[in-house]
Amino acid sequence: MPILLPEDRNIKLPQMLKVRQNFKDDSIDDVAARITEIVAQEKFSSLIRPGQKVAVAVGSRMIDRIQIMVKQLVAELKRYGAEPFIVTAMGSHGGGTAEGCRGILEDFGINEKSVDAPIKSDMDVVKLGATEGGIDVYMDKNAYEADMTILVNRIKPHTEFTGRYESGICKLSTIGLGRHVGCTSLHKGGTLNFSTIIPQAAEVVFDKGNIGFAIGIVENAFDKVKLIEGMTKDEIFDREPELLKIAKASMPSIGIPEIDILVIEEIGKDISGFGMDPNIVGLIGPKKEEPNVPKIGKVIVLRLSEKSHGNACGIGLADLTTRAVYDNIDFESTYANSFACDGSFGYWTEYIPIVMSDEQEAVAGAVKMLRMKEPGACRIVKIKNTLNLREIEISETLKPYIEKDPERFTLL
Image (cartoon, rainbow, N blue to C red; front, top):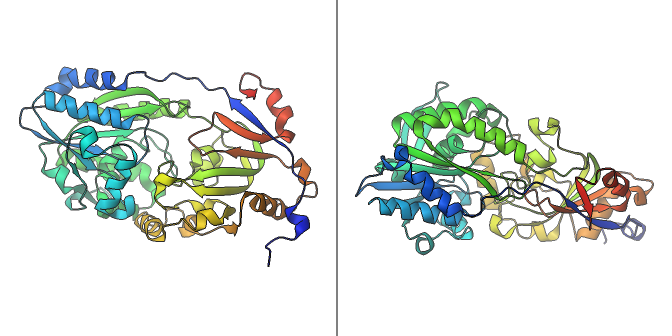
């Protein structure tokens, strides 16, 4: 039998309009040249020696032109006589398996041929010690046994907590390099406590590990690299918070303060830890109170991104989804990630929302859930994902709002 009655499914909804949000584009043109400039600085080049085994730690998030930057870093290390290799610093991502982690890098264009370096993705770790709070800290064994490890990561607001150190170098050095074991260990302390746990764990890694320096990357509102900065191990703790401030100021936003129905075309782990970034949509934890996030009635997700490999973490943030999403969920990968993170906000973020046959039925279902007497007055926004917010769709009911701010919005 049909989920909705014909009169529910065939409601008259407002027409959708395409809108461009006018963000500042200040991206770096030549990221390879910037990597060369950084490595050439004496404080970094002096750390590199002929014959040195150097682990380059790369995480699981899609970063603009990451393959180019990693390839250039490998080339520079070789130019100084070192022998670099790539370590997949991904915590529990990729299903917590070596093959899964390699698959994620492959999606970024990073493989042994494309960057001209071996990739080591096995999950063995070494216990380094414990935080002040007694949480065990681990480090990837391949990285630990190298002569030096270089950390490469984007610095941005985390999806679940706020603090001086969120997603960035310190997190990569602890949760990323901790592999599945270390990730699980740190999450036992509770994600909302990460603002304290991560810097404490990073102190252990920096003290007991072999961290040489880090490459910190900041992206702009178009998810293009706007800043690349090198930091020695001793500079990371002071500089990362400053780069986080720049990252927060550079983030895009949906720009509509009140939305009845938000339709998200795709979510995925390559997009955000929760599939959709709470810094953009709110919905959970302290991010619900961020000033730039809209108030949203119902959320619909239409599909999983291809590069998420079936990992549907965060799908529970949606109210409705489609059969296309449900049929593509890799439950093993999704639940392994969720349990490794110790249910962060409770395991409901991986619960399956109401599954509808398609987008039309999902929107009709959302209207019914909202008990709207006048569906034609519904305020609807549709975005591709929480990384791509320059061009969005809005219902004609929101046209008066965007016309009041022509500097921010352009009707296409």
